[in-house]
Length: 198
Length: 431
Ligand SMILES: Cc1cc2nc3c(=O)[nH]c(=O)nc-3n(C[C@H](O)[C@H](O)[C@H](O)COP(=O)(O)OP(=O)(O)OC[C@H]3O[C@@H](n4cnc5c(N)ncnc54)[C@H](O)[C@@H]3O)c2cc1C
Image (cartoon, chains in turn brown, cyan):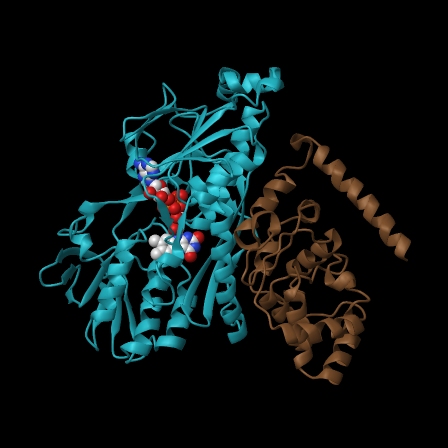
């Protein structure tokens, strides 16, 4: 399992490297870079958002990116504006953008958080979330949570809990359990934990 | 020179000595890169400067702007409600300097396309290999009798954010309890199509708490406006629009909304059918491209025609006109649009310096309006260029407005996304 992950990563990094070496003219027009540049006004230059609520998408796992965009495109994910925007791109273009953002460094900004809540969140994370969101939510395979803008995490969690967004596999059980055992405070605790990370 | 074609492209690419230098002697590049001079440090100019340096750090980028700091028009309506200060929307050029952009504090009088030089009021000349022009709009002062730049000091347009925004805010604060504000909206096309209507909501947001009997009247020479359904819905929900006690009223063309003259001494407006009197008047005059575009022969009518593949002027090659001053149909005159166009122009300039043909352009516009503390709406579009017609078309099935039936939670989230839009856009252009 572990080894598979590492293998995937290597292949992926090689692909990313190959992509950067291609001369611009070989890529389908407009280039992935040109497409990705248009996202910056909301998601920050090269996908690192300066906040306060639109999420950073730099360093995002390409599969997570494609899944999100396809779900928005198909009206299968609760959205304010991304459903309207995702419909403007072909599957190929979405893939292209996913690789562009995957290779951008994620630049984080400090966020105001409650240290006590964050501490509780750290414990809850370890018990309920770490298995998929490994390395304290830094690992990108299931979406980077560490350092993500807190209002965005709040919207996402609320949408999951209130049934407006479909849970990925296994997540519902864990969320139900943590909320049942620790009450509604668990949600803010986890968010303060992720928001506290740099 | 009207139509720009492939042959011109080759001529320019090979004519620019530095471009051939790039291909022939890569070792010499560090000594002197190709020169780009940018006219105007607003959204278009700053974004182009940053992205030129980002895409090709060899390029020597000089930006000429008379003001020491940029006060953004976007989010300036929020100063009128008291939600923001003018300082919170004012930004210096230090960020761009860190990206290696040279900032010259001067006004450009004219661009000389023959000598390829930018000439300033201060008498300096800056030679360029490519020039980027993003001077924003200018007003057609003769459109409303009795209104001119001097009168605007006391009866503000506040359509350039800054001193006049603060004046308008103070006037609203000091008007009597049941005071009346009139906003005179401009005819199309103008910068920020939803702007006047967001402005009405922002003034109402202040009055609701501090002067609940106040009235805001919009006099409009048009019969329809941007995000109209959403504005009417938001105005009714928050400010009683459509009821007898509505704080906001709108009079369109059919109702005699076109204003023809003003008498500043009596604060009276002469509209097509009746006269209107108010305590505070805000006139947003009709618009055209910034002065330097006219002085430099870049206009055709009111705006600057461009080849939308590259945003290069159709009148003078080597000069790229972006943002509000350009005719970028069908994109609106918005900050997000100017930011998007600047990246297309920057990539095209870099491609040519490197002997490549510019790639196909892609554009996005997103624009938020904040109607109340927890009530935001947006419009979005993803565009492609129809090369045959040179028209930027919205991609079928994409974009559009926030839904009419959105929940309160959605409207609230859109306010926080509007704030993110603002911070990220400013950072993307000059941070
Ligand atoms: C009230 C209001 C609200 C708005 N809200 C939004 C919004 O929510 N979303 C949105 O997308 N857009 C919004 N806009 C529109 C947005 O501000 C403009 O579309 C955007 O600023 C256009 O960028 P630009 O580069 O064309 O011009 P500007 O940003 O206006 O920049 C032009 C710059 O050029 C300089 N300049 C002019 N002449 C010369 C010269 N001769 N030499 C040197 N420099 C010169 C000026 O000093 C200025 O700094 C709003 C506008 C207004 C008025």
